[in-house]
Length: 246
Image 1 (cartoon, helix red, strand yellow):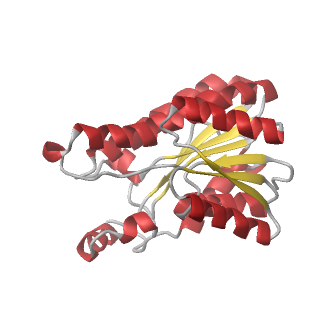
Image 2 (tube, helix red, strand yellow; image 1 turned 30 degrees about the vertical axis):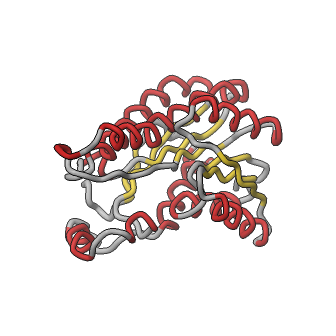
Image 3 (cartoon, one colour; image 1 turned 120 degrees about the vertical axis):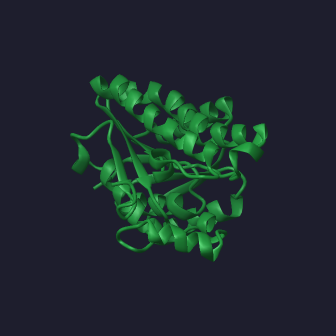
């Protein structure tokens, strides 16, 4: 399905990003797994892909850093000669009630989740435009659609990703570049493992399907958007949330 394609997945050392990287590699893509501080986990994830017969390499970059993103994209192009799939998955949370949220916690989440997505698209687009092809997949969230108490920064960043997705989709469509987003709901990852049992129970009560998603279920949708099976889709936000936002 993705034979000879080159993919870059940000925040790919674990969770959803790791699952997406694995799915893309299984379908034949050479996958660059971006990480910021989790070098060991990213290298282990890349090694597991290689051991399974895929092709992968871990690359370090803080996506919130504009110049670092430029160097990362240039490195991918220099090594592989092209970039076909860009998955913007890197994200952090710094939860807290708005009245108590520090400026630093607000800025850090926006810088990583929203500006980081802009940074990679900004630097990758020049190469994608020359190719006249490519698929960009941004990870937003049900929180960016519905909002979530205690997550003003995270919800704002993910709502921003939705606007960024639609705007870039309009700008790049004439050159054959598709830009779509996936909006997961409650997914069983390291990030949600830290939630209290009470919070988890409350979240499950909001899900019509009555359960959390696995990272693989989110990765399957990202794989669809990366492939030619979605060749006539751009500017779309696909909610994968068990019905939370319907």
